[in-house]
Length: 446
Image 1 (tube, rainbow, N blue to C red):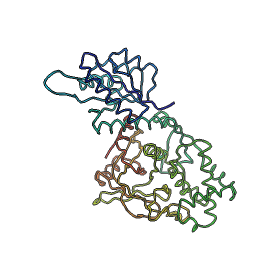
Image 2: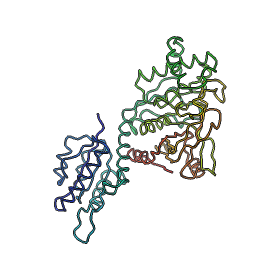
Image 3: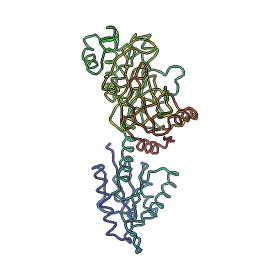
Image 4: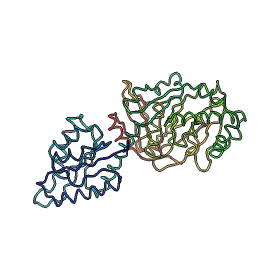
C-alpha cells in the first residue's frame, strides 16, 4: 500500500476563528509543499465526531496532530484508539500577545494531547515540534519526521539475505529472522555461500562477458589482475546479481573469508563493491545488522554508504578512520584516483577495491547495534568526510566528528558497540533519531 500521512488539525469553535483559519491555511500550505500527497481535511476538526468522520477511511503511516486551538484529550484519544502509527504533535506558537484574549492556546492543548498519548503508549512515544508554519526549524522537523516514517514503512517491504554464516568470533552480526521481522518488519532469507559459488562455477566466459564489461567501466586497473581471477570475479558477480534479482533481495550480508579464498580462489569483495554502487547494500563478514544499517542510510539518501571497521583515531583533528579489506562501493572513490583495484591485504589475492574515499562536507556515522541484553539500539554521530588519500591497503574513509573523536571511541568501546559501522554521505542524524524513536529503540547520538 502507498505511504500515507494524515494531517489532523483540531480545535474548538469558542476560540478566535479568523486567526484559527489563518493558522490552518498556512499549516496546510506548508505540508503540501513538503509532500503534495499529505491528506488534509477541508477545514479544522472542531469536534470529536468531526475527527472520527475524517479518519473513518484513512490508513495512515504517520499522523500529524496539530492543536489549531486548545482541544481536550478526547480529540487525541480518538486518533489513538484507531491507529498505532507514529504521531507528530505540532504545537503552534501563540500568534498575538497584546494583553487581550488568548487567540489559540495551542500549547495547553499540546499538554492535553501529550498526556493522552503517554497514557496510551508510554512516555515519549511520539515526536513533537513547536512553532509557526513560517519557521524554518518547523519545516525541517516535519520533513525529518515524514522521511523517518517513510523509511520505517520501507523496512516492512525489505527482503534481506544472509549469504553464509558469520565467521567464528563475529557473532555480533548474526541475526534471527523472527527478531528482524518483529522489530523492523524486515524479512530475512538465508543461503549457503557454496550455493552461489557453485552457481558461479557453472557460467561460461561468454555468459559473463557483459558483467565483466560493466565492471571494467567502473573500476581502474582490473586488467592487471591474473586472468583466472578476472574471469572468476565476473562469474561470481553474475551469480550474485542473478540471485538478488530472482529473489527480489534489497540488501545482503555476505560471508567472505575464508571460503571465497579457499573454495573459489577469488574474493567476493569487488562483487559487493559493485552491488553497493547500484544501491544494493551489501556488507561483508556476514554482518546482517551492518547490511541493515547500510540499507537505512541508502533509503534516506539514495546514495551508497561506506561499511568498515574503526581502525585509527586522531585526537588533535578529532577524526576516526574506517577501513575494510576492499568491498567499498566503487562510486565512493576519490576522483583523482578513481576506484583502483588491488589485492586483498591479508590473502594477497584480487580483485578487491584499493582506494581512499572522496570528501564530503556532511556525514553521519551509523550502526544498528545490540546491547549485551540483546536489545536493539542506534548509534549516530555527525561529522564530515575529510579530503584524505588512502590510509591503508584496502578501502578507507576518514571522518572528522562533530563530537570529540576521543570521547566517541572511548565510550563506544566501554559500552560494547560492535566493530562495524556505516558512513553515510549526508547529515541525517535527525532523521535517524526519529526513526529510532518510532521503532522504540535506544538512540545514542553524538
